[in-house]
Length: 323
Length: 153
Image 1 (cartoon, chains in turn brown, cyan):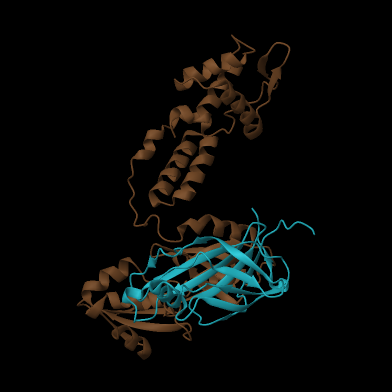
Image 2: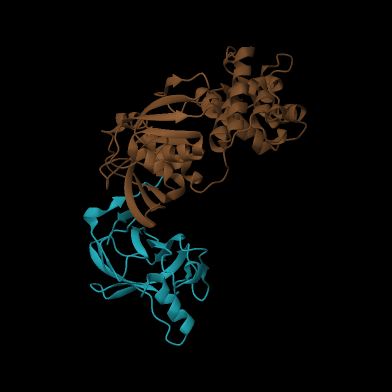
């Protein structure tokens, strides 16, 4: 945000001017002048009047306007505009959090968070230069502007406020559109793709819907089905990915891995249930996973090619080898 | 009559389309318009790269009970003829909406009719291509017991 448009710098200037005991009872023109010196830009009279109103409303600043003398004053000397009481390490923590969120790329979340933090840190602006945000030192693989991401805020609201949503869904596999009423319970990110986990009236169970396949979600009035909410988190506990393979329950999967892939599986376990059954001296190893097989698991296993071999179950062995 | 101020949505509206592609997905009735949502998947290999779709600006919604037609006001996601929305493959899809004049908030049976263009071969082909045969939907049942009120904010 340009300095001239940042209201917090003006709030700071107004606060300092009201607190100035050498020159008490400033007029509106004194406050405009104080803002001009702080921001090197002269705000309009309307802007400063609005700023005072915002300070009263958002920061509970006890600013009183004396009509007879046309001056302003604080009615409570103990009020502190910078009274949040942040320590140096608190400020550092907030700065780091903002930079991390910005780096991850969830722009909507980061904008809201930064805006909120700007309020908190308004009194500390000189210790919190905007320039620091420009240097990105974490790069993630989050694609921007992918189909459906514009629905993020709507689904967050639906989950928080427990609001049913009417959606149109397009199934890539069935090549077919359907209209559904869903009761969103959780958002899930997997492999840089976003999904809404929801109870589906039509399916009468929890289902996962990719953002990219949802068209025109609309919040509607109605009873929210929250009975299965506790199951939403548990739903993914035994799944790698988001789409479990139909009619396949939790089962043990045993995989032989080549010496070349040993380090990979050691460093990045596929799932919390992963355990090494054997590690041979030549580096060949065998692992087990206790999972509900998913399409994403099959895709992952295929990506290793002949560097791995499914030992069991037999059906998964066939599934992975046939493209 | 009391002025209608709220908006309602009807999912999975029973209807008798000539085919299920395009699919009539949802109907939204607001004080300003009636929005009908459709989904179309390219499927027919006789059309190059899935072909194209368009809709006639003369398309209308009709109520037999009220003996009244409701004009098409606007479209979203589909081109008004003579323009065309072209697909790129046989695995494409398109979500689109037709906005008609507002229909009353009460039980009723409607039709959506796209008039054919007898003097233009290309447009006859277009009308046929949209639904495989004709873009006409009959016996569309609006039942207030299935209405869900839309949250305004």
